Image (cartoon, rainbow, N blue to C red):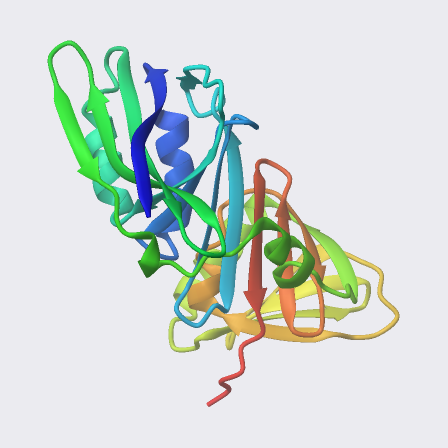
Length: 260
């Protein structure tokens, strides 16, 4: 059963930080379930590929995104289904020259087991231009609660921990592009170093200490979805967990099972 329509309202002038944050998800999927947490003044989103072998969670504060929220006496966490991230970004780009408003219209959806707050429409407006974007149904998304991500998906028994710099991510991406007849990239430990290798290259990316010699391969296509930032990385038996030092972002890439 749905009740009356409600809104979350923002004012903004420059949302480059917000659109840049949205872009980090489109590398995995153009659709996104965006959560607007009014009580904590943050946007939260999690996305995953079809096989769920790469999962990303990130948050950004309203003010860091370039938005100022109108105070709501009854703050909710609103789920906003975005069908096409690049299209929404192009729409927002039309408003970046002067102050404008963003209004999310949402409804309270109540069933026997839970209450959800679902976005219906995003309205953008300045003195000369009005645009609107219909929100997509929440039914197309498999929702990942915060605690499921942190306590299960991103939880790993760490075999070796190391730092991976922005420069090394750029370097390995370039090498992977040259190694294009091979679909895997391997992380391994040897001689107090973390090595990243493809079919035709091997690169030392960090110093580390480990009592064993673990190795884990992931698909290059999934590795390429990693944001170019600085990370603390936990290598486990079946996954790599990348904890960004530059943003509130965690990316989990699972071990590649297909070795054909």
